[in-house]
Amino acid sequence: MSIEKTYAEINAKIKAGKAVVVTAEELIALVDEKGLTEATRQVDVVTTGTFAPMCSSGAFLSFGHTKPRMKMQKVWLNGVSAYAGIAAVDAYLGAAELPEDDPLNNNFPGEFRYGGGHVIQDLVARKPVKLKAIAYGTNCYPRKAIETMITLDEINEAILFNPRNAYQNYNCAVNLTDRTIYTYMGMLKPHLGNANYSTSGELSPLLKDPHFKTIGVGTKIFLGGGVGYVAWNGTQHFPSITNVDGKELCGAGGTLAVIGDLKQMSPKWLVGTSFLGYGATLSVGIGIPIPILNEEIARYAAAKDEELFAPVVDYGEAYPSFTPGNLGYVSYADLKSGKITVQGKEIQTSPLSSMPRAREIASTLKEWIRKGDFLLTEPVKPLPSPADGIVAHSIKEV
Image (cartoon, rainbow, N blue to C red):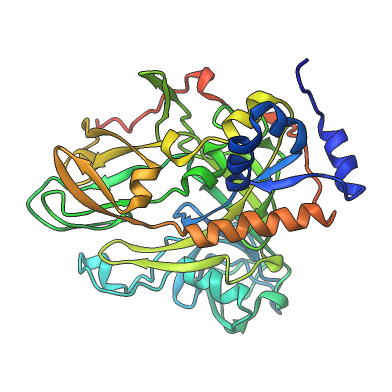
């Protein structure tokens, strides 16, 4: 007899304090011990986690009106520009934005880059941030300039809205050229000198629900230390699964657009990050609960590192020009071992994502649910899945 559960049934157990909640790693151990069917019967919710740089992040900020009122045309926060073409005193601060006078804009590799992600971390850390704005002046908004200090609690709204987070299965980056290169995947040494990856493997949220059976628009999540929601599929959402020798191999795959109240979040889980020769970004903590509605969902949630594979991509030549550069796949078990073999050469691996932090996120979300502080939300709209066959488009030159 098949096992079928509903969101309502699971939420009722959460409210009663009777739900069985485990992390994805704990589910793997339980399946090994008791088998998939019994684990499906016992477990109600599996929690996942990831903490990694996520460039496509940012925050909508509504500062409050000045006296006299002002329609802010250009805005800077600690010298980092924010986009103000929204409304009078609203702006969007992108995590990857750099100050206009940053030497990186002149192709100087530099070292530490302070950018939008660092401003967001400073805001959630309740540090004062310098606001500068200019305007052209109108009858209804006559003021033309302001410079002042703000804090997160002194502005009206602060909404973290990240258009592309939680990549399902990001590339393992290598470099086949004879020169060192600097990328958003870190420094890559020549002649396959190292390999960097940025997914938490068996804790990675979208690898545990690769067909988007439970994660959709409206899914409630752990976001930046607070509560957030999946707002839509993320940009560059191209979920695909290829069957090779009986194995399901995900490409870079799906992404999520996520949203939440920045004022509830923590500088521990939103961390401004700098990459040598590339620029600034924001490291984001995300945890997603997966309701175990049936055995199929449990099977994917219980996938082990040795069953999950990342694509190996040459960032030296193939990635920038978008020519074929896939060098095969490697398992997360191999990546986490510290060494992989590519083209017959043994290479040292390094993660850009943090496994200890991913575990902490999954465990924190587990406790929120067990205590009844976090109920599950059923998606109001499914996200595109591998079965939909979405095709990526590139900009055409004219």
